[in-house]
Image 1 (tube, rainbow, N blue to C red):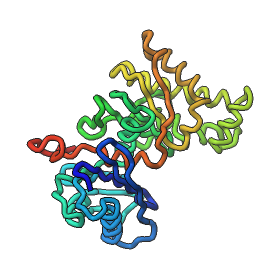
Image 2 (tube, protein in one colour):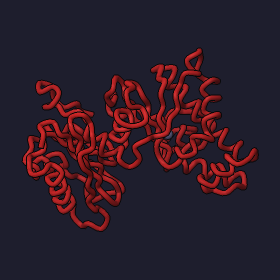
Image 3 (cartoon, protein in one colour):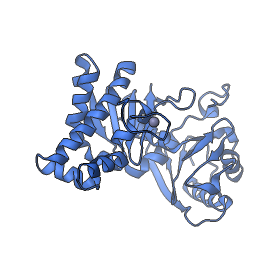
Image 4 (tube, rainbow, N blue to C red):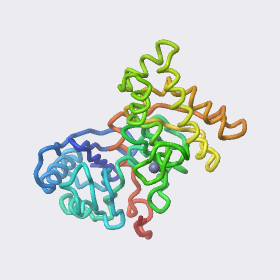
Length: 312
Ligand SMILES: [Zn+2]
């Protein structure tokens, strides 16, 4: 294996996807390992280690990144709590993988799975070549990954959480304790709720298809949802002057019917000529974004040996 081959691991609810990138960022191979039904985390990690060795062709890997859902202690390389993958709770993931792969733990990076996927899209997907990007994930909730200067920006650990920017102070209560957060108005879950309240079908794909086909209540609803999204993004534009937003997740397939509303919301709440130059794009890497982004996570020993791990 070449010295700078990077391996990325994306831990999902049913499957772990992993792959390797060569120094030019090209995919050298992909594998998957089952998680669903596996009783012990050690067995999953054994499977991951075997797949990494296969990808690396018998040579020890020099850098591994892991995207993991849940609450993580980045400094300790530990999974504190992963609600959908409880066998990982308390797992010293970084050290356990490092031991199995005979790597120094400093060569294994651990990051939230959504952040890793955002980095993948920004560097190799829909925003390739751009330095400052917000990746917005429209799914059960609204997630975000902020890339500034080509790298993930975490702040103290939770930067990029666009889903909890308040858009309507009178809006529905949010799981975070606030109300009217973007997530309560523009996630797939929220759109389903809004549609049912209007007597429309609760299936977001059906809503998008109807909105594409003709004028009507579906188009009006998605215009309103898009406008709420635009209002949320306007806060980001005013603060950071971002010009590129990438939309990932299942509901991002409706971007074509949301776009007019998003632009209207942006124009209303952000100011200046720049609003017209903002690019709205759909994610391009699909389910590979997670492992590709994980492979691209910075590892202290590879980039700056003297610097300690950033802690959350
Ligand atoms: Zn919230």
